Image (spheres, one colour):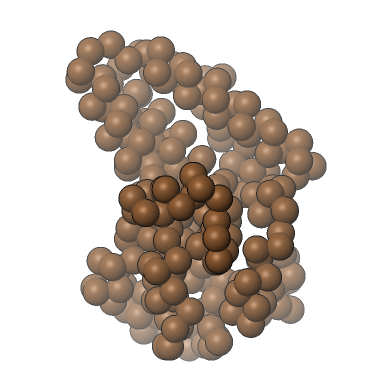
Length: 211
């Protein structure tokens, strides 16, 4: 199922992306589509941080439904951060592809980018879903001693999470730099103390030690 969902997601993303590009007419639509893509990429980074934060700080491996499938991998990652380097592509992205496939398919079949707001929305949706599906692959590259050449190129230009940016999460006190798609949001969110503020508001619910 994970393999089928991954392939189907890629096909739908390419088809929908082509529809968005085909709808571009003039510089205004180019700017709007580019803005939607950047906004979606930020959304993917934010969602990755939220999921990572919850996985590190809440519940445990015995929690019904989410314990073994969601919480346990995050806890194991702190014990053996290089373990994910050995995971295959489908193992890394398959679960997310299953979740992202329905909205991607729905967008392809129902969203007609025939206005600037819809073009922006399409770019945001495509970019956020594609970024979310690729997050664990990007995360793996940030832990590889020598990632593939294209990944190193993207890391060097700050377009995806770099090892240096992610290393802050694996250093004491292990409670920052949760965003793992681009890492763009880590600096402002850590500087503003967003995660700590929410944890204080939630009180004892955030009781897990991420180590």
